[in-house]
Image 1 (cartoon, rainbow, N blue to C red):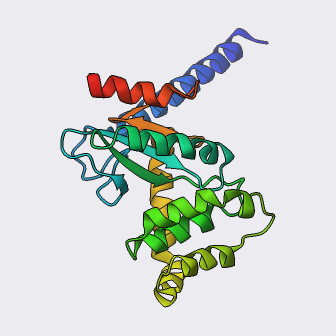
Image 2 (tube, rainbow, N blue to C red; image 1 turned 30 degrees about the vertical axis):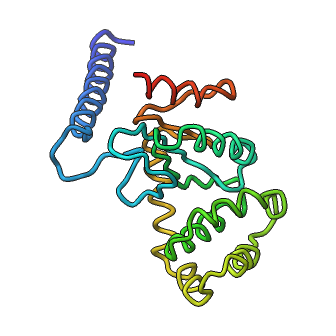
Length: 218
C-alpha cells in the first residue's frame, strides 16, 4: 500500500473516532440531571399520590416498598412487613408502590384491582387479600381478572365503580407510573425497599429491619 493512501486511511479513521467522541460528549451534556430546573420531576421513591399504609407523621422514617402482588418473594416478605409495621407503628410511614414484573401473568391485573379498590378507599383491604390468596391465583398461564372481581365483591366494594375503574385506562396508567419511577430508580426485582430515600440491599431477612433501626436511631 502506498504511503499516501495509508496516511489518508489513517486520517479518515481518526476523524471518525473524533466524531464519535464528539457525539457521545454532546449527548452526555444534553442528558438532564435531577438538579436541573427544566420542569421535569426526577423519579422519587415517594409521590404525593402513593398509597400510604401507615402514616407516622412528619418525623417518621419513610419506608417505601416496590412490589409485585404475584411475586413469591413479596409474598414471603408480606408477614415480615406486617410484623415491622406493627413493631414500628408511629415511628415509620409505610408506603406501597406497584412494580408488576413481566414474567407474572396476573401481576398487572392484581395491581389494577388494588388501584380500583384504592379509588374506594379500600386499598389496604385489597392489599391484604391479594397476598393472603396469592397461592390460589399466582403462576397462572392466563389472566384471571374475574378472581380479583370476586375479591372486590367479597370486600363489599361497589362493583359498578370497581368495573369502571378496571376498564378506565387511567387506572393502568397509574400502575405504570409507579413502574416507570421504579425503573428509573434502578429497581429490577421485587420486593425492593427504600428507607428515607436510600435503597436497601437485601441479603438477609433482617436487613430491612436493620435499615429501619439505623434510620430511627440515626
